[in-house]
Amino acid sequence: MKSATARHLLVDSEELCLQLKEKIANGEKFEDIAKEYSSCPSGSNGGDLGTFFQGQMVPEFDAVVFNEAINVVHGPVKTDFGFHLLETTSRRD
Image 1: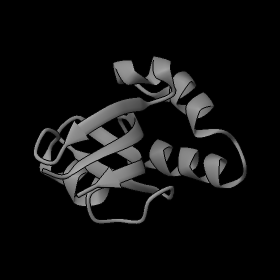
Image 2 (image 1 turned 90 degrees about the horizontal axis):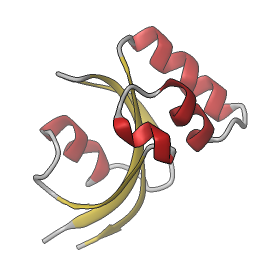
Image 3 (image 1 turned 90 degrees about the vertical axis):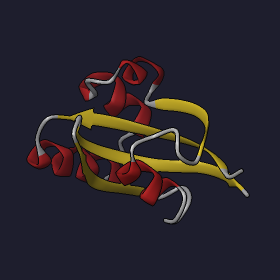
Image 4 (image 1 turned 60 degrees about the horizontal axis):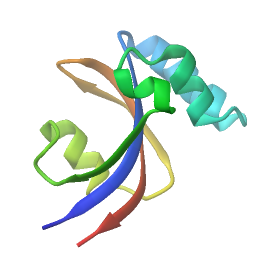
């Protein structure tokens, strides 16, 4: 079963999500941005979600984590929870 480690941040607007993605692209640390802005409890850990298996997260999440480039910030990804920035840090088949 496929597994991955990833981090994310969750905000309630696409506009804010894009602004935060730009801050990260300009050198600010993902962990610091997640701690300050993410509404998910994982934000206090810099957005770290630990290890999880394909199918444990919502489909929009899995589509990015299990298919897109590793160590690249992806998003905004819209789910029922809001708008996410996602970074897969490792993946195993």
